Length: 217
Ligand code: SIN
Ligand code: FE2
Image (cartoon, rainbow, N blue to C red; front, side, top):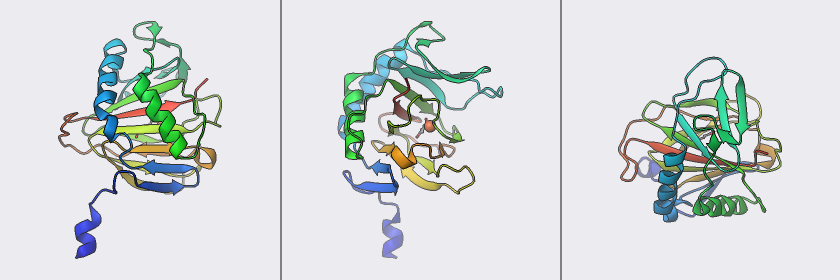
């Protein structure tokens, strides 16, 4: 009875879950700065609008994406790659807001990665039903830097596997303010997001935002 009652309780802010060697979930790390992060989001998506990219196979992604930083991740019929210019506006991507950068660097340090210098931040926007299939982040030049991923808004089920696609992924619930860092032996782990359940978040409504920081170039 007690176990059932407490099963749904989120780990405390400040708690850390080791997901695998090199991979850590930092519970609630971004919550204290959520208002500043969301102001940065307004600026970023005002200059680089969210859009549904096409995969090389011709599918339209259910997650809407944008970028900030010197490099931005894009996908179209010719493949996945990083680009210095937003293909929609043909202008450089907006700068990474300073409070985003501070959080990403701090999260990396807490997970054991010193001197993380991201040059790309992918902004993912999920509406109910949107999902991201299992994939590896492998379009970056250098895999020595970790990936730092910040979740805001509606909760999601994050799938986190190993370097082998056939291994069954772990499932982790990510709530507003959670940060996941993976690098080192976990850098090429397959990961994805299960279809987003509907809900209403006090700050973001029926949306989940994920900010993924990388060293791409
Ligand atoms: C990603 O893999 O780029 C996004 C992961 C997430 O939305 O949590
Ligand atoms: Fe990814």
